[in-house]
Image (tube, rainbow, N blue to C red; front, side):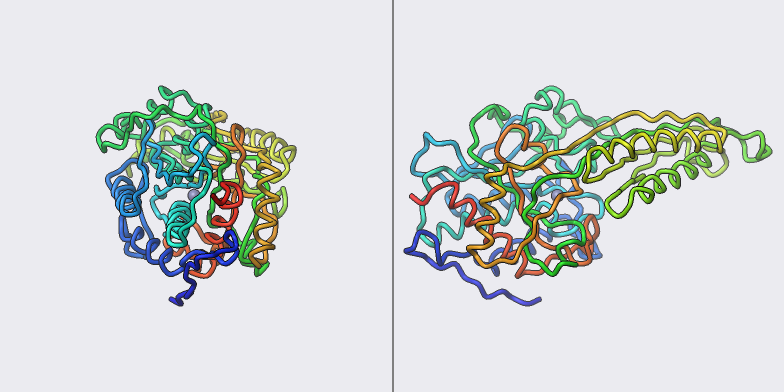
Length: 424
Ligand SMILES: [Zn+2]
């Protein structure tokens, strides 16, 4: 692994020579990756599990070593505060998540959190105070891999969920977010959201191939795809395998038809169309019995909201066809949605300026994936910085972003935050 060799330099030109310590950032990323490490090089820190909590504890130790303030709100969002010289001004926030999916990588979410920590450490090392307080946030349950849907902490902060709604979300075993927070000691006593924030910046890996294909190290994220998630329930009838084929109502045969139909919806909407069947539950799921019931998650997504709407209509029609072909009843119900979101025009322009000023080649990009920033954008000025994912791979143990790209992303974050928070 190459080292970047970039060190923080104290600047007397109001931050002009300042940059992050790419080696220190990389070392922190690799230390965090030891928590919940998987044999293939990735991580599993599902939201509100002991591994997730251990990741937060490591971050808190690093933050305390720098003398930063630590706070937690009632939904478990973790705040690390580097005080500014003008506490009456609304803080500038950076953040992302430390939880992962089952087959998580080392960078998704983690880069935004540890990139933010590196921003604070670099300012400390350079002896630079900011006017506005800097807050680094770890949002609770971004991935939704255990408690679906995700972005629990960010949606509670933005007011989309009441605290009671957020705490009542349950995993497949019936454990509620509130119970898990209490068991881990991750619930704090700060109220959730409803306070002034000057701006929110999130650094994240792209999780797709566009930046790498373009050979560009930085993406300025202007907005999001429009995404519609559905729950699909397929209702067959349990039977012994001795039952003749023509007499069966096999929910798994219905699922097979449905999965292929879902894929065709995306394919028929061109390169920018995405359609997914990504989770399935079969009942009773035993070898000797025809499947009675299948539950699935599926979604359609496109950059153009009108196309997403057309894809949703196509999905309904395709599921109707799959139901007729397989002879089992199917029910498609809306589950979750996001987009279209346009990030704050002023912050997006600040990021473009920052890239020019810092000499990072960049391009504008739209995010296909959901992020905490999307949950926050309706209520506060928000923007995102992307860096390339090798091979476009993410939610995979082989997810990789090279050290120089991580450092470039953190350098972008540092200078955008410094511009917004004001050199004291
Ligand atoms: Zn993420």
